[in-house]
Image 1 (cartoon, rainbow, N blue to C red):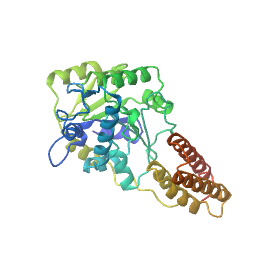
Image 2 (tube, one colour):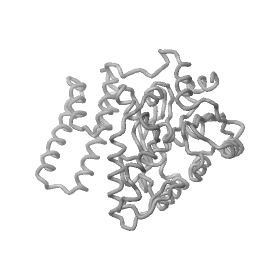
Image 3 (cartoon, helix red, strand yellow):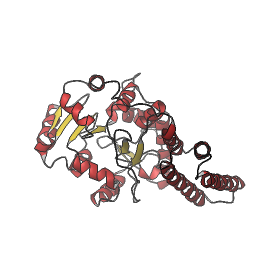
Image 4 (tube, rainbow, N blue to C red):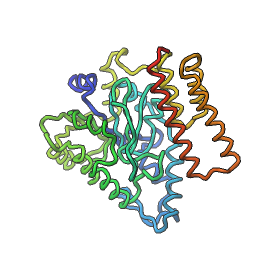
Amino acid sequence: MDFMIDKIRKEQCVLVLGPELNIFENNGLSSQEALIQELNIHENENIYRYYPDDEFFLFDEAYKRTLICHQIKSFYQGLHPNSLHKLLSEIPFHIYLTVTPDSLLQKSFDSSDFAFQSGYYKRNKDPHLIKSPSKKNPLIYNLFGSVESEESIILTHDDLYDYFKSIFTQRSMPEKLKIHLQEVKNFIFLGVPFDKWYMQLVLRELEIHNRQYEFTRFAANQSMSEELTTFCLDQFRINFISQNIPSFIQKLHKHFRPDELRQPLSEGKDQLERVRKLIRNAELEDAIDLLADILEDTELEDVILQLDGRHRKFKKRVIKGVLSLENQQLTENQITDSLLELIDEAKKLSL
């Protein structure tokens, strides 16, 4: 444990989270199991077939996939972080990789007012622009897409094929994240489904099978067969610890001093991180208002006021119905990009 703590402190350890972390405290189901129960797959007319071993669907009409995506998004949006998410958000990891499409960890960071950045796999699109991950500004990255974007969710074998075609050509992952993953030598896996063949391919893509004896990897899972445990040890040098996931997280958390645990944003420049938080939550109007307050009586005051006027005109055009959905999304993205650029400029000021 002391070795892992030291590597986390030095930003040399990545945390990888799987669906077992999201065990529902009231019924003992993982989020994936609860989702399947919610979809009622045997009676759901939009699902042509479900493959439980791979946890993928088959749809006979494209619109049915869209309807299922809507159900899945509603399901995950209704979930709330549990006590384990809170503990993990306080531990000063610099990179969190999740193999589930939910934003539970992001919600936990938001509720505690912690600074963070996030990203996810985007099908056939340029990867997210991120800053170099650090303890002060950690990255939460959804390896298999996010419910934030219907196109990024991997639901079928065709989706998975597109995913691997993208990551094998190194198109989908942010460059700074790839560099960090190539440099880091220590991983902790919690509740990751190692029994899935595609998960084993992802481990190889992360080059965890290379330089086996230079890496240190620990994992905790609620249920692992002896055969699979041996396979993971032989192929990836992953060592499974005896504690269950909650016990392991609690023990890990207790090894850090209170001043080492992640702290809420403070006043001053950290106010800019609150603006980022509003942008992440698609609350552009509130983000502009807060940034206008921060930049009052500075050289950037006119810039934010111009952006505010631009956003107000945009909202009026949306209300009038003169913009297509595509143009709405384009304009909103442009305003968001302008806000993010202005935040970077604001950080250079003595606020």
